Length: 342
Image 1 (cartoon, rainbow, N blue to C red):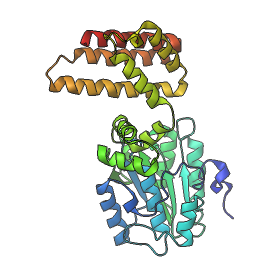
Image 2: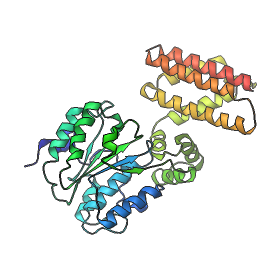
Image 3: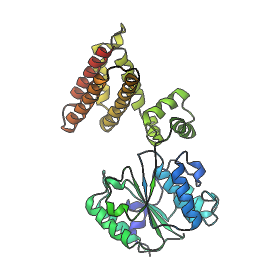
Image 4: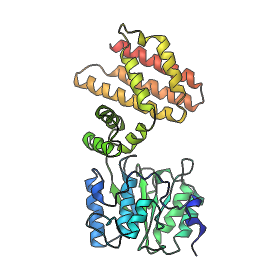
């Protein structure tokens, strides 16, 4: 009998249902970019030298999770193709439906993978896969793993149970224990080009206009997963409005007046959890201005000061200062610095 920890309801090692799968492709041809990772994993599967643990390392939103899911489907397909699963067998169909019993997840809870999650997960590995050659477990964001959880996982990596493949994902290896890294085969993932990012967005959001796709690709800085999340909320619209208002400073347009800035700051303050990502978008805008100034050999120090204004706003929010006041001061500071650059 399988342990309860393997059921979807446990939230510790669950199947694919409800896990936000971006793409149900079973072949690497469905992955845009990441040619190095494709080459490495194809060699692994074609030679049959399947490791017990892998670390997929790269920025958030570049396709690590999707790649891990395709790898899992490929390993468990009884009629595999040269670059993935067949897509038609019962195993691939279960993968596509999000209900494969031998593809499971460990995800951060409230921002961290905790030791109780890892203990329950490791106990479940003592049981054989339900129906496949391998149980493939995808441990997401292990850079968010607490130290005691990491040490508990290390014991399993040192003596891995048979018929189990662990795929760990992390934004950076710096926050992962070196002893964990040394026991994994590491695959690097990179930001996509602007053209590749647009191609991914077109696949998933064909309803968006070309100009919006270009803007999302630029704001996501090579991480189309971030762009897809941006497309689902109002951050981009607020970003465009903010940039338009700030860049009109110094003109005769009344939209740059104090009343508009106050209204805009109030709108920013309602973002709650999305306020810090919104500040990230403002940083991207300022960074682009800095690059332009560098090419034109203009003085870039005022742009550095704008970045400092955003840093200070974040520190104040972390100290639980009044959100409306923080946003208001930030916008007026940015407006003032833009005016000096005009």
